[in-house]
Image 1 (cartoon, rainbow, N blue to C red):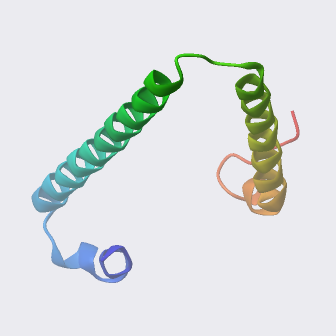
Image 2 (cartoon, rainbow, N blue to C red):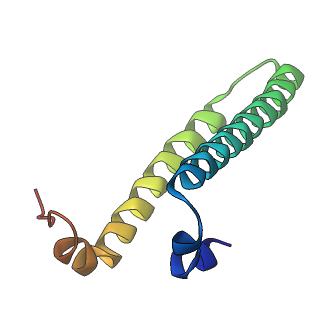
Length: 94
Protein backbone atom coordinates (compact mmCIF):
# COMPACT_ATOMS: atom_id res chain seq x y z
CA UNK A 1 0.00 0.00 0.00
CA UNK A 2 2.86 2.35 0.81
CA UNK A 3 4.52 1.79 -2.56
CA UNK A 4 1.23 2.30 -4.39
CA UNK A 5 0.47 5.53 -2.54
CA UNK A 6 3.99 6.82 -3.17
CA UNK A 7 3.89 5.99 -6.86
CA UNK A 8 0.43 6.96 -8.09
CA UNK A 9 -1.87 7.16 -5.08
CA UNK A 10 -1.06 10.73 -4.08
CA UNK A 11 -2.40 12.07 -7.34
CA UNK A 12 -5.70 10.24 -6.93
CA UNK A 13 -6.57 11.36 -3.40
CA UNK A 14 -7.60 14.84 -2.30
CA UNK A 15 -5.50 16.86 0.12
CA UNK A 16 -8.24 16.72 2.78
CA UNK A 17 -8.36 12.96 2.52
CA UNK A 18 -4.57 12.76 2.66
CA UNK A 19 -4.64 14.69 5.92
CA UNK A 20 -7.30 12.37 7.36
CA UNK A 21 -5.43 9.24 6.24
CA UNK A 22 -2.25 10.57 7.85
CA UNK A 23 -4.06 11.10 11.16
CA UNK A 24 -5.64 7.64 11.07
CA UNK A 25 -2.32 5.89 10.42
CA UNK A 26 -0.60 8.00 13.07
CA UNK A 27 -3.23 6.94 15.58
CA UNK A 28 -2.94 3.27 14.57
CA UNK A 29 0.85 3.50 15.02
CA UNK A 30 0.39 5.09 18.45
CA UNK A 31 -1.99 2.32 19.53
CA UNK A 32 0.35 -0.41 18.25
CA UNK A 33 3.31 1.11 20.09
CA UNK A 34 1.28 1.45 23.29
CA UNK A 35 0.14 -2.17 23.12
CA UNK A 36 3.72 -3.36 22.59
CA UNK A 37 4.96 -1.44 25.63
CA UNK A 38 2.06 -2.59 27.82
CA UNK A 39 2.55 -6.25 26.88
CA UNK A 40 6.31 -6.07 27.38
CA UNK A 41 5.80 -4.35 30.74
CA UNK A 42 3.40 -7.06 31.86
CA UNK A 43 5.79 -9.81 30.79
CA UNK A 44 8.76 -8.13 32.51
CA UNK A 45 6.66 -7.54 35.64
CA UNK A 46 5.72 -11.21 35.83
CA UNK A 47 9.34 -12.28 35.33
CA UNK A 48 10.49 -9.86 38.02
CA UNK A 49 7.85 -11.00 40.47
CA UNK A 50 8.95 -14.63 40.11
CA UNK A 51 12.60 -14.11 41.09
CA UNK A 52 12.22 -11.30 43.66
CA UNK A 53 15.92 -10.57 43.18
CA UNK A 54 18.12 -8.91 40.62
CA UNK A 55 21.62 -10.33 40.75
CA UNK A 56 25.04 -9.54 39.34
CA UNK A 57 24.48 -11.68 36.19
CA UNK A 58 21.50 -9.47 35.33
CA UNK A 59 23.64 -6.31 35.56
CA UNK A 60 26.35 -7.91 33.43
CA UNK A 61 23.76 -8.79 30.75
CA UNK A 62 22.45 -5.22 30.89
CA UNK A 63 25.89 -3.71 30.32
CA UNK A 64 26.55 -6.22 27.52
CA UNK A 65 23.32 -5.32 25.76
CA UNK A 66 24.13 -1.62 26.11
CA UNK A 67 27.55 -2.08 24.49
CA UNK A 68 26.18 -4.29 21.68
CA UNK A 69 23.46 -1.76 20.86
CA UNK A 70 26.03 1.01 20.51
CA UNK A 71 28.12 -1.15 18.18
CA UNK A 72 25.02 -1.85 16.07
CA UNK A 73 24.19 1.86 15.93
CA UNK A 74 27.76 2.72 14.91
CA UNK A 75 27.73 0.00 12.22
CA UNK A 76 24.44 1.28 10.76
CA UNK A 77 25.69 4.87 10.65
CA UNK A 78 28.93 3.82 8.96
CA UNK A 79 27.01 1.62 6.50
CA UNK A 80 24.80 4.51 5.39
CA UNK A 81 27.45 7.22 5.76
CA UNK A 82 27.79 7.92 1.99
CA UNK A 83 24.03 8.37 1.63
CA UNK A 84 23.78 10.52 4.75
CA UNK A 85 26.52 12.86 3.51
CA UNK A 86 24.81 13.45 0.16
CA UNK A 87 21.20 13.76 1.36
CA UNK A 88 19.47 16.61 3.17
CA UNK A 89 21.76 19.00 5.04
CA UNK A 90 24.71 16.66 4.75
CA UNK A 91 26.49 15.00 7.62
CA UNK A 92 30.01 15.30 8.91
CA UNK A 93 31.80 13.26 11.56
CA UNK A 94 31.26 15.83 14.32
